[in-house]
Length: 44
Image 1 (cartoon, helix red, strand yellow):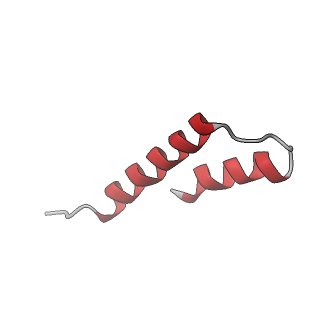
Image 2: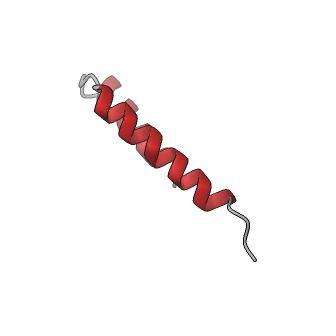
């Protein structure tokens, strides 16, 4: 789930030759951190 954002940015960079700007990187980081919090939050 959380790898999709990172793979999307890498796909755009490597395959489509689109250089990610700072907002792409910030958004990707926020998405990955949010997914990690959801995955590893204590349940009870």
